[in-house]
Every structure is written in structure tokens, then in C-alpha cells.
Image (cartoon, rainbow, N blue to C red; front, side, top):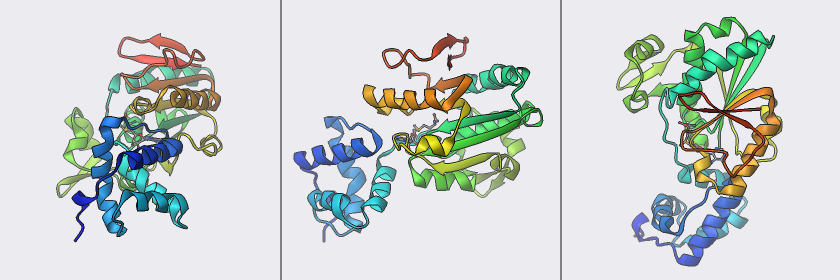
Length: 276
Ligand SMILES: C[S@@+](CC[C@H](N)C(=O)[O-])C[C@H]1O[C@@H](n2cnc3c(N)ncnc32)[C@H](O)[C@@H]1O
């Protein structure tokens, strides 16, 4: 019997597979990640009764189910690490500065996009903090949340989280918005209803029309997986999608330095905001 561990990826297969992943999601795999890809996909090959990566690549390229398989493949290769109130200073900045300024300027409908939201902790954190600040009563606020990975989106829409998602969450927030359910915690349905999830690949040309125009974009801890041309494409999409004034928050280890000069960078002490 073939076991997942016995399906080895050859060098030329690795090159072809990483090219396919790059063309579809811009995620780059360094040569040192060959065994990671092999490990992550071996089980899938076994499920499909393939004995080699060559057969799997052929299936991805030519089979009638190639689109569905691309989704399965991308679900296997993304890194979805996230937790509630991650890099909270930027969220607080949005609550205390960016949104009040938009409201003062007369904006009555504010649209926020959590692009690459993973399992939902980021957009739900924004919804909880907006609720804490009473901002849903002051303006129409819409939160869109997208990710390329359909499995994490299904998870997000259940609103059921394990302890690992709560590192750094004050008990007052956890107790107020979550109900214990066995070993998990169920998010309050009123908060869940504030976030609209849908699948979105940042490199799909249709995404811009799907999300429409935004006032605030959170895109954190995803640009690190892209090379410079891919980062430039995404930043260009964000610039086109944002209204003026508009705000872009990136992850702490991400920067627009050498990527784009279309935004004005401002250091607010707890982090960086890029303004349009
Ligand atoms: C490390 S998580 C970051 C989650 C959250 N933004 C945070 O900072 O906690 C990165 C997410 O980017 C998503 N991703 C990777 N490539 C993508 C692409 N081309 N389009 C949309 N999402 C992508 C992954 O599926 C993953 O959920």
C-alpha cells in the first residue's frame, strides 16, 4: 500500500508545482520548502489515488475538476496563523482616530475591508472594538472580510473558537462577547452579523469589483508571502479601491518601502498607517 510519506516530489515536479501556485496566488516557495510542500500534499495525492506528483500536476492542469482542485491545493498551502486583537494598536488607532475623522468630515457610510482575514479573528476584533466604542450607532459601518482559503472562511462563519485564538484578549472582552461551548467559545451573533465574508484571491482581477470602494483596509501578515511584483500589484489594487481620504493598515513587519510611493506614511506611535 502507498502511504502519504512514500510519495516523494522530484526536483522538476517541485519547480512546476511552485510555478502553478505562484501563478494562481502569488505565494512563493523557496527551494528549501520542497519537503514542506511534499508533506502538505502527500495525503491529498493519496486521497486521489495518485502515485506521483507528476500525475497530480497533470490533474491540476488538465482535469475537468482542475478549478476545484486548485481550491483544495491553495487551502493546503496557505499559512493561516491569526488571533483576536492581534497588533491591537492599529485597531485602536482606527477606532480613536480614523473613524472619528471620517464621521467629522460628514461620512455616514464607512466601509472597512479585512483582506486576507484567515479564520475571522481580525474582522471580528474590529467589530467588537467598534461596538465597544459605540461607533455602530454613529455611522453605517460595513465590514467585508475575504481570504483565498475557503476552509478558513467556513470556520470563520461558524464563529466558534478555541483558546489559542484568545492569547492577549482581556477576560472582560472574552466574557462579554463569547459563550463557552464545550472546549470552544461561541461568538455573539450580533457581532457575527456585522461581518460579511466571501472568498477573494488578491490576484483575481474580479476582486476589485466584488469589494467595491472602501474607506479603510486592513491587510496584515500576508504581503510577507509575496515577492516585490506581487506586492506592487496588491498595493495598486488597494490604492484604486480606497476612497480619499482612505487608510491602509499593514502588518508590523510589512512596509511599502521600495514597493510604492502612492501612500503617505504616518507613524502614530503604536504603528504605521498609510494614508491616501
Ligand atoms: C497569516 S494569515 C493573516 C491573517 C490576519 N490578517 C492577521 O494578520 O492575523 C495570512 C492569510 O493570507 C491568506 N492569503 C494568502 N495568499 C492570499 C491571496 N493570494 N489572496 C487572498 N488571501 C491570501 C491566507 O489564506 C491566510 O489566511
